[in-house]
Image (cartoon, rainbow, N blue to C red; front, side, top):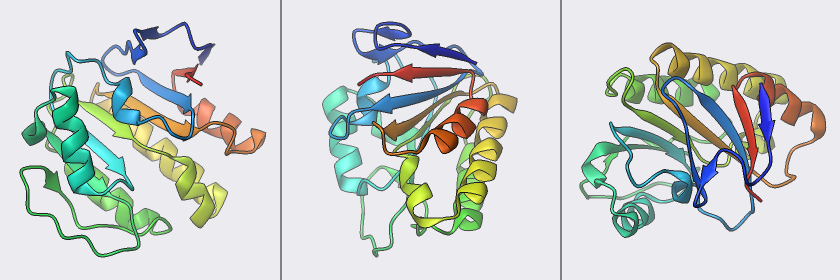
Length: 181
């Protein structure tokens, strides 16, 4: 694993990620993870986030990304009503890692190997609701699945929201760590 500061691995505040590479990014709390994706994103994107679908759709359009090429796995304890072009799975509560894994795996099947992106927003949220060992095993499963399909993976954590032990465990599952704060 290679660790980088905020000037490495980024072009104009956007990540450079090769196919199959998994990157853990530490971000400021108010920055949007979608802002990390290059404007030239090729392939479809699986986005796992607690951000409501309508907001995700708006942010994608603001960035000029094709909404119909993004699948959203919503992580929320609330009911969602969304009737738009963005593909969404059934919502999953943050402590249901089995349900989240099932939805993620299903969405991953829609991506072409070598051409898609996985964007997992605010991974640290899961650690607030589920036992850390389970979250680490889940995260290792997610990064392995994306790597096996030669997909680019970007996983964000919020600033210093994690203790050092959990942050180190997450870092062992990725190829690079970038501090974009």
